[in-house]
Length: 108
Image 1: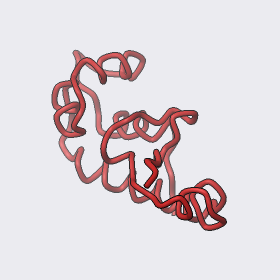
Image 2 (image 1 turned 135 degrees about the vertical axis):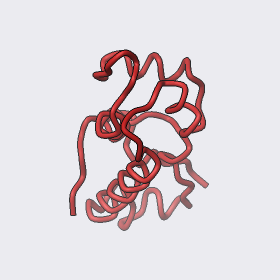
Image 3 (image 1 turned 60 degrees about the vertical axis):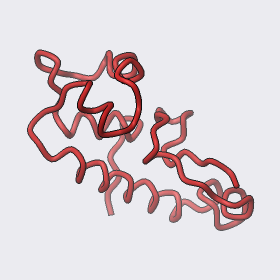
């Protein structure tokens, strides 16, 4: 089994449980893999984005709340969110999801 980042680290993706799926070698590297099939790749990204918007439904979140929701340490997200806009340490859902999606939104 292979760990696959839905939003690739090379595209600004972060390492947190929702962004990682387990795939067989064929699923990961075959012709119908996210690496070789844009439709599959985009579908995984749209699903992740939808899941993130379903998690972040309130008006704003602290780094601690983001870290807890995504299963990583506060320190990890403090570093990664340094350049993300916030107001008094409160992040809007759209800015959180935009960052987690590698600085891009995915639409149908």
